[in-house]
Image (cartoon, rainbow, N blue to C red; front, side, top):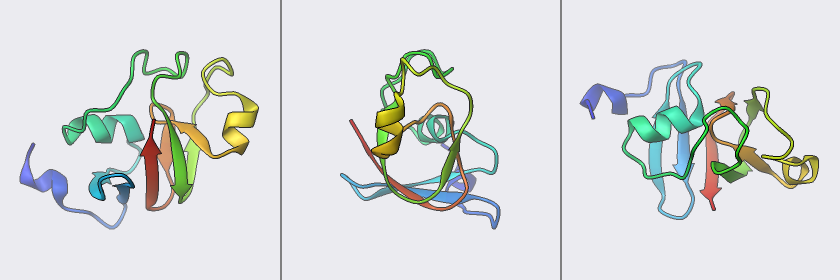
Length: 100
C-alpha cells in the first residue's frame, strides 16, 4: 500500500472498523469494499455486484448510499436494521462499521 493512500483529501471519507478501531480512507466515488481491499483489510466478499450478501456489515454511524443490489443479498428488514453491503456502499460522510 502506498503511503499516499493513507492521506485523506477533502473529498474523501474515513471508515472506522469498530471492533479494531482501524481507520481506512475511502476515495470519493469508491465503494466501501474497494477501499477496504485497497488498504489490505481482510473482508468477506464474493460477487462484488450486490447479489450474494457476503460483504454485509452493520453501519453503526454515518451516511452511505447503496447502488442497486438484490434483496436476496440484503432484505428490506436488514436495511432498516442498519445493515449495508460493502460492495454497493458509497460514502457520504465518515462512517463506523462492524463486519460480520
